[in-house]
Length: 486
Image (cartoon, rainbow, N blue to C red; front, side, top):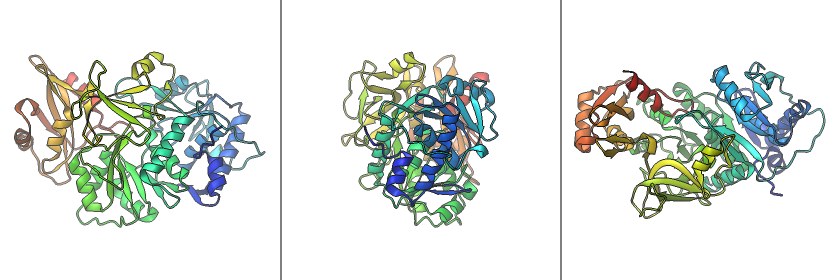
């Protein structure tokens, strides 16, 4: 049986007294982290939770959330983290779909009548008796991570221990993580990026994680100087807010070896601005919940190509195919397909969606991409985001990239607006940097200099902020809904 090196009891055997997980309430060594998971595992067993069950955890970012996941694994159960901002109805839907029999919440109340509620302050800190951990097999379910629901009702991606083992091992190798690495966590722990890149990958290497809670632009650099991490992972919106900091903000970033940008498309300009201003290496990556997080990433040491998300991570494969499933030539656009040991087992309780998404072992991402001669992937757009204007296919990301290059533009989103004559036309929503003076007319003129006429947005609206989903991605469905409602 494989000894998965990210499991808390394995970490304790290897790294013992070294620091593991911290937040503003506690600091746990690998030994103490394992001890806490053993204590909570005793509680789970006492509640009748065991192999094959699902444990839900609905907490804000804090050390206990990671402890509960480890405890679930210790008894042979899977864990499903729930967005703590969910309404009771949304949380109940996830609990019901996942079949979770117990849910850990802040107040101990359960949003679902069939799930036992357990309060975070009632979690045991010491095991009442020594119970040996149940060693999982590769096919055992480790996590049920729900998609953001940007294309419909959220679906539960079933990630096995083999998936988690492959992903964390790949992250350690790709980033060159060692026991000296220290990740500062700012992304939500109900998302696969935070769990893989910022939690179990550094722990697997013998490093540590410090949870600083919800991201705050005003507090971020103070946290960075206090924690002194070697890396952190963030979404483009966060990097845009950091880049917008006043010119007199000069943080000490000397501890940071690299920063990871992912989960949503980012402009070349923003990557360049952050790298130049803050002095750390910026690496953009790409992946899906369904592929256990990352499938392509620019290297920390090696050739990084701005405008790409890097080559396939070693151990995974990427193909670009046409609508008929035929592989296209280098440099041509098509759908991005992924294969390898990180591809999920499927969607829970949804065999139809699973069959449509995983075909002959290849994960169909729904993203449009291009591979260059060196195998570096450029993600052009989502297939479903494509705008068809008078029969011509327009990719919002291309228009967004042009607008992002205009002076004073902090964030931009382009969506299709229904049009009686042309079917759809592109419209843009732009957020300026603080104190920047931009106008729709100037932005339209900028677009005219960089794009053919059919790609120039029919409308440009300047806003103070763009709507975001819980993971921090720009919420395009909300923008489209506004257009339909008008």
